[in-house]
Picture (cartoon, rainbow, N blue to C red):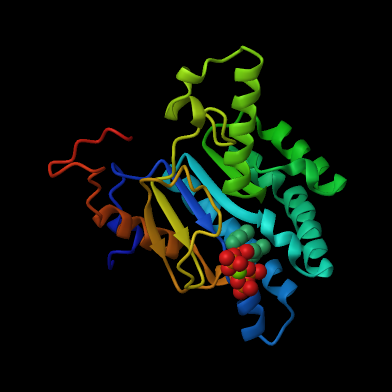
Length: 251
Ligand code: IPE
Ligand code: IPE
Ligand code: MG
């Protein structure tokens, strides 16, 4: 049998955390002569296949950028469609998450999401909270600048209240006030749709991530694209500012 892409993966050197900027739904819909929301609907299939592939491989964290703080400027019908899709997908997929032992988490200010979205997210997070095969982290109403400003504000409040000393504020403490506190930083960041930008996603956490850009539009993204990104990642020489042989201090 010819070797598959999956066979080319070194299972002893997998990233622990993969983050994905899922982009290109609108262009995919346009290519199919349909309205943008058709692309979002088909994006769900890509999410399902990607999450399943990552869980099977043993990836511990998969973070998906689903809605940015900037996305609110889109037409109301599109924002509504995205929120409705989120509710229906979470409700429909909870069974699969339970079966596959995947825990659902969110980052971002979900208090600003519609009540039915918060309800289905909270229910799903509660049902899956003790599962540990993989953490599926949805970035919702998320942006990195928001998150960093929030952390700074909280820390400043604690200093003001005398609960913290300013001399104790270092990288480790700061990271513990980000919404990703307790999670390893992503070693691999994927962006689909051929755009070469980060769009306000995990700016702090990707300080040393390997970046993988693919022209594939998100609704077409499948497990083979995940495998390809991991194979690409495994070819990179990660130096963390050092010289070969690698002294991995930022792990
Ligand atoms: C990504 O696809 C989905 C979200 C940002 C919610 P887009 O909707 O940005 O699709 P394009 O980039 O316009 O093709
Ligand atoms: C980034 O995609 C946000 C999400 C994938 C949720 P966008 O389509 O919003 O980003 P820009 O506008 O191309 O930077
Ligand atoms: Mg886009």
